[in-house]
Amino acid sequence: MPNLDPAAIIAFFAGSSPLYLFFKLGGIVFSLVFLIYTVIIHKQVQEITHTITNSRNSLFILISFCQVLFVLGFLLFAIVIL
Image: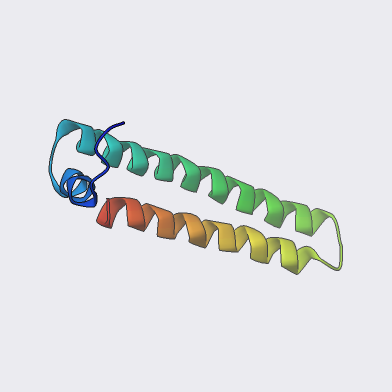
């Protein structure tokens, strides 16, 4: 079993090894792709709520907007923290 010393893990993520940079770039690229996906879904939900009238339209828009905010936070986390 590999060494799971917390100090070694912190040193790995604090360093600038190629593996660390790979993880950081992967996280940023994944976050950007996920952001594009959520913006498209949010626009589709807005269009559907204009087409189909329902008592829960505002709830659907709120959920899709919260998802966009979550992804923006995830992108910020990937850029700043990772």
